[in-house]
Image (cartoon, rainbow, N blue to C red):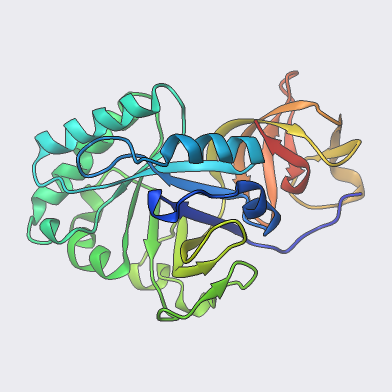
Length: 282
């Protein structure tokens, strides 16, 4: 039986630093989404990337993207880095996040805008979604002056208001510290702690909240129920059922929606919303 949930969408971002992750435990802890480090400073793949990608898919944790911590100080370097990330993904579609925060990029001025746009053009030109990750202070100091010239609508912003205090995945952040009010724009996600505690991950891990709709472009199937109502809107009401899915029916996941829903499309091209509790990512 479906029931409405007011839970927020939680996401971890991980790298080889987290070691061997039990993604089934992560999902059981209520964290259904992940962003994975894809590439190292030497431009080789992160040593845990393939294991994490496969582990997420096996456990039904949606990979909302991969991130590339950037050391680019020239547009040539930005283009090379983007092409290398694409080669590692080798056709696997997801959002590619450019992590812009390193000290080497602080004094670049308008050149930083050109670096971001060059990287973005390579990524989008290959058919991928693009986003920028950075801290609230870095955004305000080095990105905001050129924000109208940067070709990006997806911003994932870090602001740790709780110092280094440990935060369980079940605890939601205090929205009064949401960085969107400081940077003056809506954001895709807020990384609210680097001291998250999640079952299946040893030690600290970054935790984020994802807001609104976001294209994820993945396949899933109905799991943990024999019948699943597909609805016109992401709310439980008697008159908005558009289809009923059976156990193991496959759907194409179009977007993450608020409060624990996926927007999906069936093989017959019917579009609607289903609870993410009953969908396993393929």
